[in-house]
Length: 468
Image 1: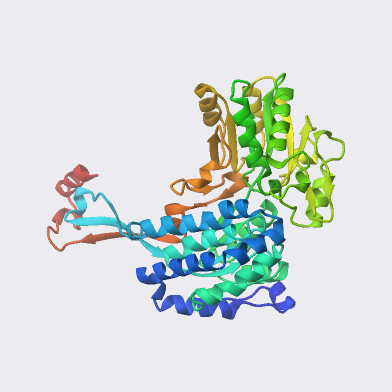
Image 2 (image 1 turned 90 degrees about the horizontal axis):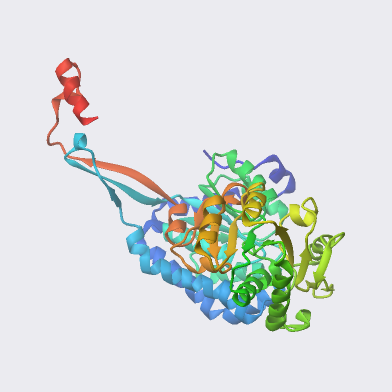
């Protein structure tokens, strides 16, 4: 069926039906199915990142205050590693995947044949405006799709640079970048797609899913939520604090898998807080807002949102803001009300609540009484404690005795569960997300057994039963 824009899209004067149809026409020529084309495009994207490294780092600095090291590790370096891994394994991923064939279908063979979905929409997020747009695109290219890329309008500099660079390096008959805000996104969602990949918050995720339902379009939703972090009193305190500070305050806490709050047994909270405070000082100095390694809040609106979380809570460390940057210092809050906004909403910023419990089972119940998180962390010297937490909780990913490091392994699919998202990507999981695994059975004309055909008899039925 042809694309038809929604009433809202028509009223706004924005319509991308022609864009989608041009990409779809290009897809139907079969050019993206070529393995050579896919590899050529992946190498072109690699050149884009390498040859424009300076400008990309500069854009990320302007948008989010990201230091060069953080931007290289979490954005450019991540993408270059992803491309390298994809090129290394793509020949294997595209091959048919053999499965066994039942005796009744002999002689024959059965397999799954990966094939591209078609034309896909990828909607990126502002907190990692390069990685969260181009990592899904890498998977979409590998699987042989055409794509529309929608960068976040909040990361203005990165969005503009991507829109400029993509046409210079990539096959524009198979990819388009659409910049803009709510109206452009709404118009894009009104079109018919073969897949929609969205990274962002739960509220917009529901809008994306509702729009996709109009065309029965499959979706991948990479959302977020409140990722808990258990700290057992039997832990290596120095390393725990160091890794917790690194994971929480990277990108000023604006990371979907950052530890959202810490659960610790009563009586150990002050020891942990002092260790965290010392480690913040070690990593960002006595005045973190003056550190060149500490990032900004994306805009004034989000800074005001974060400031509102500080009302009626016990701030035991930090809390300073710089409205001009805008930025907020690393902040620790002790025992906020479980009904307060800071414990009801994903913080997505540099505030770390500390929640005390009588024992870890009470902490597990606290987590299980709430929506399933995207990530879960647990620190302990005792394997039985870690295993108990892993087995008794549900989350998109788990990492023990560290934070966020599971993202470095392309063999581990990344995705949420429940309210934290659906579907996954990275490595082969991303290739599969943007592929249809077509079921194929190839049979021979030999051994055309008589008992499968009418007219039936008791003899035929008895023979058939042997194969059931």
